[in-house]
Image (cartoon, rainbow, N blue to C red; front, side, top):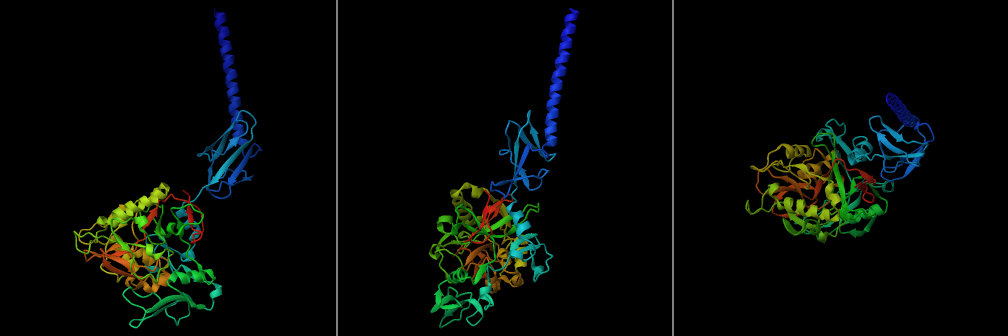
Length: 500
């Protein structure tokens, strides 16, 4: 009996040693493979050539890629059943195989966020590519008028003269006698008009734009003359802040062109959000005929810079709350333009295009501090929007997705030479302000001493008007901070495309 027990015990020990030996050999083999994987021909390393393209090239480097690359587990594979995984702590690929194997390891280029791309690639110094960093310590003209919020903002003109236009001194002309490329003519028996156009209350016998080198051809709007000069090579786009939003078409439709106001880190967490404004105006298809809908835009379109059929541009009231006054209310939180037209109808319009577009819009805090009048500089407006009280007991902030531009957004979109000018006299900056579109349109800010007054842009000047009247609208919103781009150079014919 004891002999049987002894035999069984010996066999158990031998079996255990064999198993242990096999396990050790397997473990050692795996370790050896892990150790040698970067310096043998068992591995082919494939790196993506351009983020998001899916194009890879073979490389022979002896170290694993680190920052800027992501291990692609789905594409990485071995020919004879081996497995590949990424050890994020050790920053290396782990290969497990019982036999000699040939493996292919794929790494994707990590796409920077849209904000990271703008900050690290487009911005190089204040003024380069139209970007200014508002850190409060700039050295350019009127840098002391910066917002001081560490935002990055696009500022300046849309167009610049090319070498072909060397005989001209500027793009827009203040009169028919100046040496500008694009001129405005307005003849009237009662009033004189200049390049900013004729107000809707002025009756002109004849008005038109023309290009100085071809004065016999007249254009009803500024945009007609701009297109002519652009097509003929006399001017070029220099403000590359266009984004295609709401369409994946090869050529972005005009309705889907938006522009970057700037990059903002309002919650100071280091993650910037891009703030977009619709490049052109809205129609009833986008905002509906309910809520604060007023009718068709009814003022002059002579100075219009956009590409729409102007008869389709819709006008909306700011807040026609007759329970407050017969002229409306300057409380944005009760406005149906806010609640219905922008944050219901417009979101539904975008969602019907594809829900992915709505999913990248951030809910943000909008500032409702009011101002007494337009006779203030852009910096004072910026500070008032964020620090002033509202009229009476109106709220000073609210949270939602869609809003309108602040007067300070408009002011800072002009070249810095204009930042010391009061916004009530800002038409002098029209030629150097990319956000100026030539029509009367609402802003988000209300008047601090009148229950029914809000601010709008009229012929380039900031003005105050009854909240119950109807003007053009351009929606504004922030993108979520993690949104990336897939392509584009930012000009109107090659806008940035979102990687969504």
